Image (cartoon, rainbow, N blue to C red; front, side, top):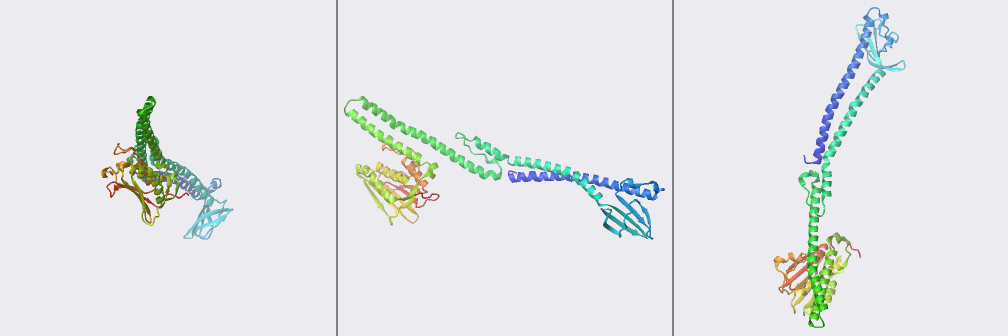
Length: 441
């Protein structure tokens, strides 16, 4: 009976059976009592009529004072009235059989039978029957009132019991907090609520994972910021404590690089917070030409590439239509992170190719370099925040995590593979019109 519907039906059908049996017994008893009383009254009136007819000296029996509702009359074969229970009320003779007629301003019912020349007529007032029925009907108010009270009480109890799991679910949800997000037990709830329980458990699981990820992110961010900030403080102390000379110059150079690293890390942290999934609905969507955007980013990074004598180029395949619906600033960060990572890991004198290719439904951006690449078993792990496979090359370990989140919000996908030259090929495939997003400008 682990079902609200089953519980309600069991309670209501059980209530109906019990109350029906009780009311049937009570109504039967009341009906039998009223019928017996009316039968006894009729027998009493018949007895008085017989006594007047056969009881010697009928003149001494004045039945007019007894308010008898039954009048009996007898006629002989000659049509003479030989008996009348109420001589003071000579009822008109009716045809044989049952009849209804008006007499003395009231409605009467009569039965007339004839046998061997003798005719007997017995009649009574219709309002006497109505009075008896009203009295009997009034007595039925009590059992029906009891029926309503009993059934109402049982239905209220049934509803309370059936919906108890809803109150229990509310209490369980109120107990949940960021420190306690355990799933709800499915065995405690009826079948109709399992869909809701499963949805709540899925939400609680995702919330728990989100809180854990945020705590992990805060811990990692604090750890990553502690090192550059400590280095900044040490180099600043050295620069302040040293007179003019080589040591001070080295400290100032280290201080400058530390500021650059801290600035880059803080910017990446801000980007990661900005592109949190809960703010996806606030993105500014418009038409973005990815080929033009890639060209702009290549120009922006050309100075860094030239410093390492890296050949940084752009190729546009197909008809050159790289337009999609998306957040321009977010997509710029995707391209910037991929090109920046390629420049960091490509050795001096290397080559980086940025390719934009489009078809009817998607646009793909591929950044290929001839650096060391990423082992196949590590390609999924590098998308985690603060994950770095080597410490010899400066970086924050946030670029790919930010990139994947932005791509996911654009309903696209990013894959890492081996480039033809042996380095890394990062491919981002984006739909031209992501579902569930509306162009705003």
